[in-house]
Image 1 (cartoon, each protein chain N blue to C red):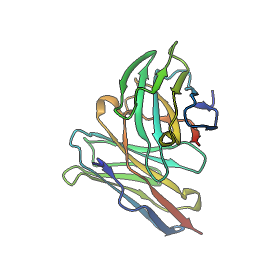
Image 2 (cartoon, rainbow over the protein chains, first blue to last red):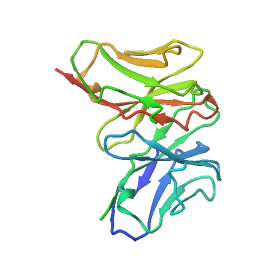
Image 3 (cartoon, each protein chain N blue to C red):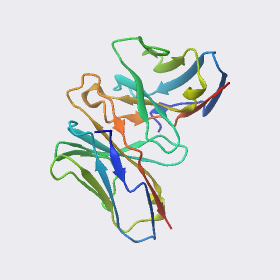
Image 4 (tube, rainbow over the protein chains, first blue to last red):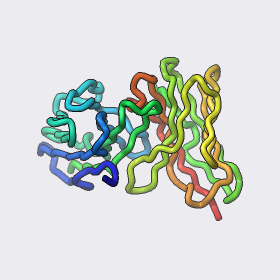
Length: 115
Length: 113
């Protein structure tokens, strides 16, 4: 297991289309996070899972966004009816809750461009 | 209202000298702080962290200092190397969920040979 894997690396879509991203975390990690990063800014928290349970969602996550982690392993992030403002890097990260000094292991992200 | 601020967008340092990156925060509920490094086309990678019960944590060439009263932390890199050139993000979180971090906007460090 070499780390957090995200697919696709790049996604170009037209406004109004739906897109879905996938994240495969480090296998023994029970926490999985989604962040969004726009140019010149730091990552912003969107949502996180502990095992298969989605425990928290940011106010940034409109009802067009939905995330799942069906079996507590990989996760998907879907954006419905995309808007140009959704263009950003979507980062997935995982961590081990039991780690006393918890830190995030990030994937390389999915760069979304909405035309 | 930005709760974690990195006021210097960029920093340029000569190889072998010290790099000092600064970060300020406003939320008193933050009690765990992390630094991440990011290369182009990659996700951020963890560098070093510090909890609020400490004022200093050291790991090789990297040292993080925390001044709780001033709500300020800094990352020192000594000696700086060209491979350290990257974007550095400061992050802060409540200790109950260190993964749910609030990030600053980053400082781009350039280390010149």
